Length: 171
Length: 193
Image 1: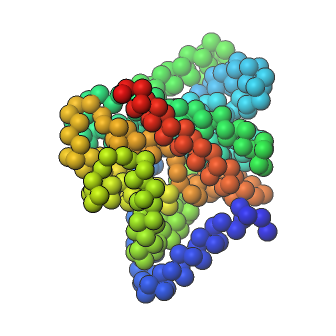
Image 2 (image 1 turned 45 degrees about the vertical axis):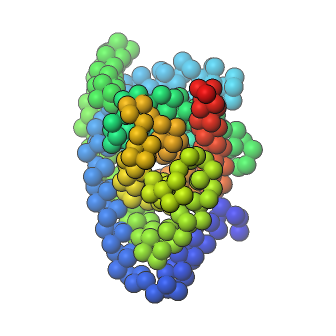
């Protein structure tokens, strides 16, 4: 049994045990949370249809493969899977877009390939930066966000580069 | 901005396809199947999202997330500087960060927005973002989610032999990238002074 296989069972065990100890109505809580997230998933659908349309067309036209081929000599030289570049570009802008690209990478390369693993780590360790900044600052009167975007993008860039290194070193 | 990007992608596809292949069949297939693929993607994710929504609601209702928020507060006080001892902003920040760690996306955003508003009240930065506001935004643009459930669900759907093996990598990469963002906020702040 590996450490990563144990994380989820341990977390689930811990949460249920703690809830029992605190006399929480496990059944009602679970149903409430599940219901809420099912709604979220369905709310995601219209955006996902649009992004699937745009990315599906880009792929069918050959433009996406053309782009990947174009950059792959450079990417290969630095040891970064070229298939993951569209994901790195899209993730800060659109979560649904990133999800769609991730699905395409898994379809073309399988999740256990090098590109599939790097894409998984990248998708799991970055956020939709532009969207998040827009939502957070829109709630205030702030017009000048100063170095917020630079600092956030520095983090994203770190995550993109590190996901490749981490997969090589840890997995 | 996203609206322009999407429109550009669609237009580019058609143009590129006509130039390179002189036939449009594949594009028409992509258009007609986009909706179907989106629906199956949502169905793939629906189950795991429902499951985690349920499990995490239990964590929330049992007070586990509040407890973690309390544990994190002293640490966060070192990063979010200059706030009062019983600052309501810091409380909202701790709740927001905890919700993010657990992957409670729905709960995290309103808490984050509340924290931004409280920071504005407490620090009165005018139309320029305060250091703490920027710090909070980089905490939210870095993904600090412990378990990347949607990624794992997609890996399972595509037949991965070990869907959760990426978790340690994700945690390490997330923490380091957050630290880089936080360090840059410290650096920019010093440079200004």
